[in-house]
Amino acid sequence: MSSHHGEEEKKKEPDRILIPGKPNLERCDNKVISARYTALTFVPVATVEQFRRFANLYFLTVGIIMAIGNYFPDLYESAISHWTTLGPLAVVITFSLLVEGNADYKRHVNDRETNEAPCVVLKRRDEFNEEEDERDPH
Image 1 (spheres, rainbow, N blue to C red):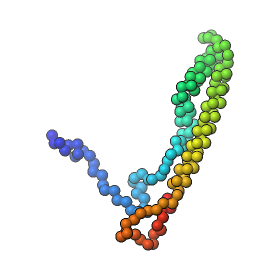
Image 2 (cartoon, rainbow, N blue to C red; image 1 turned 180 degrees about the vertical axis):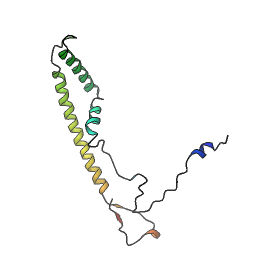
Image 3 (cartoon, rainbow, N blue to C red; image 1 turned 30 degrees about the vertical axis):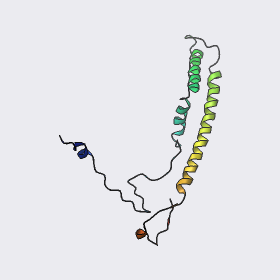
Image 4 (cartoon, helix red, strand yellow; image 1 turned 30 degrees about the horizontal axis):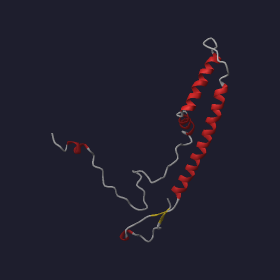
């Protein structure tokens, strides 16, 4: 067994050749993405994040137990309505989602501004072509 056995299994990656002003679409781009959510993932992911907080999970559990007592009185009776717990919880979660949504929207705006800002592309003197613009539009 050769000591180079692990090296033989690895595929050798080709050298990376960068051409200024021409993106290599086979690799990742340089976009800045600091936003946490997309339009499709905001509600489910942000809601799950809210219930990672112990207090929110506690009041949800208590509200569900109270609802079971209200809807199935044969099991046990609940002294007060489950809405006294779930109502305020829904208000708190909704407000938290609105605040988080606003903050994420601002992150999207800042990301767009950063990604659309002009940048300077550095070239070696022997590669400089005077016909090309010195600034990359992206």
